Image (cartoon, rainbow, N blue to C red; front, side, top):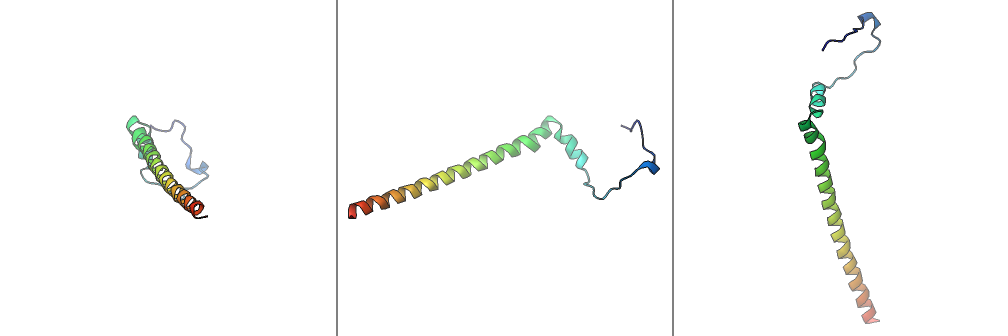
Length: 80
């Protein structure tokens, strides 16, 4: 779609210093249902799954360390 009120070249103030080719295509794709699913929902679900996995791993390690400490304390009480 053409700009309804184009700016004459002599009125342009800024200049391009950096450009990301094809970024507009990615933005357009992100506004579709498929794009939303692909770019937002799937990565979000993957992050949640990996973080839950890490939490369960840390909880298991914490339980194992707790059992080792309790065994050491019970052995120390039995010897005293």
